[in-house]
Image 1 (spheres, rainbow, N blue to C red):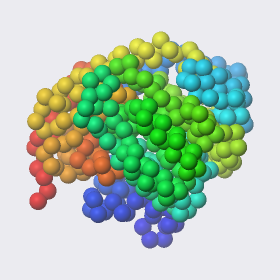
Image 2: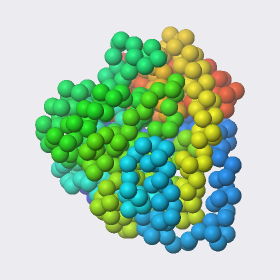
Image 3: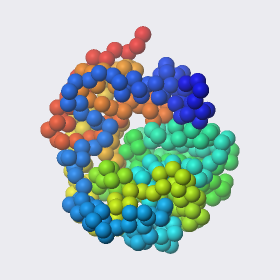
Image 4: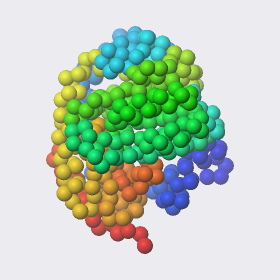
Length: 409
């Protein structure tokens, strides 16, 4: 990659060659360009035909495009929409906000993550990140020149929360890292890719350490409404003292299947929102103007819709977990939230070999585990939000193919 800016070289994450033989970007290009049969099932995201958006989504967009909405909104988004978002996230989710000044609308939650990172870190800053965690976060951090320190996730053996092991961050490792005076902690909650939801002890520890050692936190809570088995969800920003040092990322793209409208939301201190707007003004300018108006109804008008979706996804999760754990080639923990499971491959086969063979022989695209950090090695991420009949057959093919992929000598 000679001749490219150093930031682009870092974005490719060449250091992963020690783990997978090539840079992250080269490995992903190999997967993108690998042959596969017609009718590939992409299990890296949900089937939005089987699980479409709320009925009001398209009429609301059409009304805005037909004259009800502004074509050129402020860079941070339409003020009336931001006021509605602030009210809804405060009353329905319990995320404190004083109003529109603490909300920015972005082109997808990915855009919110990028603008938040650009507003908070400088080259050389230390940033803490769980292992595993969302696949794009570390590459963004590398792009900005941050030093990344991974904090292990732990899965206790003793049951908790409906008889399942309750995951946590390694709190001793987190405190040891906090003593190094990081600029920032970034974490997805529920965790992407595992679907883990952290208990009160983990959230309390993050709050206490962030205030004691004076660092900010970005909490990516995109899936925070997609929680199973009646589990309680704890918003970090709701903890005493955390509203002024937390950026909460939200959006309707996953739970409400509105990904195609490219909408994201960040709730943050007003001064930080101003900085994020400065970044957005010279990158994407604004979230899609007409689409912004869908957020006026989001959360406030879709409670019944989300409740039904949780039931359907929960059934798919249960079927997926049962089928995988009945095999001898993979095992998986039930996810607490999200639309993903993160099964471990028991055969010892290389992540990349498994992913390439699944695309070629099973006609299924998956996320190999190495994308999510060192702890992801030996796993794959599957999105189970698929048409039930199609997904059942795809799982059979996945298990059959995985059984035939031999470990590298």
